[in-house]
Length: 167
Image (tube, rainbow, N blue to C red):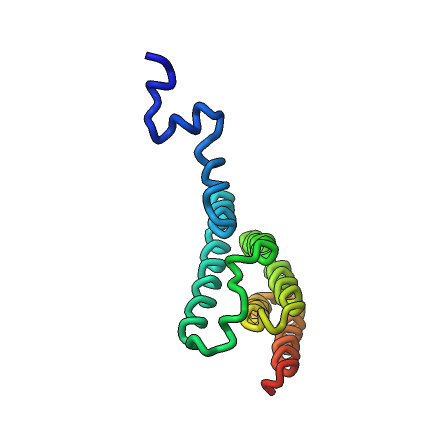
């Protein structure tokens, strides 16, 4: 009875090749799936939920727009690793800041995201709006600046709307 014969078929190939199950998953799963797992394993449940809600919103918006809509030409964020990386970085940064009672830092993380996605206005208008709204939420918690962050958030929302002719 050798060691290989004692392993269950499910684990034997990985164990014999010196590969852990998580390593196999990293190659088999999508980038979005692996990133989501990382976020959860690092303890950022709120960031995971927000990221999942963003994926869900984009999918539902595409479905409700119909097949003849131009929205289908916009790539899904789940298939764009560079955007997923910035989302993970800044969402977890904002969550850290909220946990530490630093809403001004959370505000800045969301503002960084809004400004990043302003580089792709035709693709990511909805993300720009989302993160400017998150800035507004955080600005209402900041107490030490006499409403400056709130005024800035309002200004940024107005500028974003004006840029696309919604005012």
